[in-house]
Image (cartoon, rainbow, N blue to C red; front, side, top):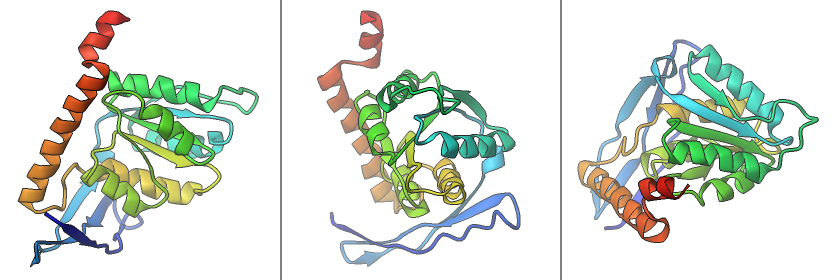
Length: 213
């Protein structure tokens, strides 16, 4: 089955009310057009715990996003760093956040380094972790609706605080498989099961890993 997407701009009405509206892609599957769907979700209604982490190049952006999330009432576990004098390497912080996400100590993770790429590379070495580098809201929406990402990585060199907050809100309010026709939703759900099997074959189950620690 071949999927083509026509991407449309998101309509974000945060400036007017606390609910964000996202226009999802129009899919063309085997020559058939499926209608656009619009999902609404309030960031203020999200009940989850998020682990945050950054290196010195991502600290300022992390702090801006952290304050935004706290203002929304979202529970935060800040792994650090928390000052520019601390020089914890990006791979150590990414590892600590990824471990928490993979073991389900937190619901999701958010990592910020210079580009977001180094953090994503490290986080994705942990089973049960699906980290995505996102530089715009379109990528954030796709990383959730298609890939079920549970770790978002951002780049302090690349993304402004204003854009980062839009990305984070999109990422938090987009549900896995949302906006897709039912047969595609089923395929996406099955893909996550297949990925879990591949992870078990490569790493062993999360329970088995816990018993070895």
